[in-house]
Image (cartoon, rainbow, N blue to C red; front, side, top):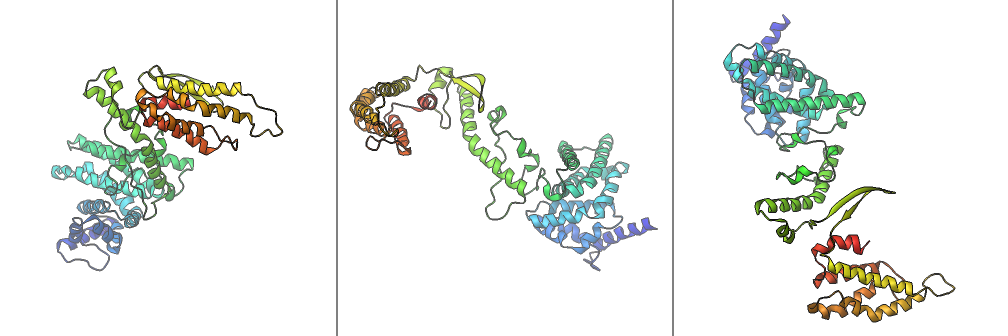
Length: 447
């Protein structure tokens, strides 16, 4: 009696729609209206289904005809393409708590292989995709409270999929891949639940996507597994990493989404110039068939390339592992001259010992040392400048003298440090230092 009553209820909803009588009694949904609704915009479908007591009543029917099950899944799949997160969250909750998810869908999926009508079996691939879309959204929105029901459905799904393939039904690779992703997420969520990491639906990490809101996001890996430094594969493929737009006008969906968004954006700020520069280097060598000498003369916007650099063995230091970088400094003749200039200043320090005085601060011997620099600064700078830039020696020498402190106050501060940076900048402006000298400036001049 119970079985027949349930069948009559599902049939009643179906017949009601086919007669076109519309909504009746407030507790049964019109088949025709649901079919027409499925063709509307996703947001309209989502709002209508989430706010309809008739739809909720339909989901709680004890038995529903197969074609009505298919129509429900089609309407839900359409609704879950909406961008209205709050509406989708409510609708996913309605489905999660319904008998449709825990009773009707298992019966429908488990009975697929017993259908003898070839025409009906050929329609199953499309219906399977709709079911997967529903399961993905429910599991992504309510991972803890839905994972048990979804895990049962996945097992039934896999068995039916194998049976249908045996019967000759063409199941697309994408359908199987989507099912594998749901299975992987189910396994991960179950493991997190066992470990106590995942205790409520608010703790989850969104691994599956909203189909329409974030295209391609369902393939994303957990941002915590992404290395901070770029890896080799990033330099050999053209596709760009997925980046969520930063939300500035409203709150993020949850903490995990916020962390994921900003980690990816910050990492891309760091990695992108390096990735694009190295890709340009690789493509220049391959596409233009340049030899090593031609590549050395090539200029790149985002990177400086040192072809003769060697990475030495790691060394243990107090702050951790350190690597010694060795590179050929023969082309860096100007840097060598600059190092000679600084070595001269060091030698003058040794030649100007401190004088005895009551205060141990601001030793007056500094003024003697500075006086020597004041006299010799232009001559020292001239050794760096080529003939066509010799006239700049007087101006550049001012920055050198300002970079070593103040002879009146006998002090040294950040302004003098900035003056040394300006001194180096002047050498770059007059063409003494070039982009090829950048690494040597860091590792040699500032050593």
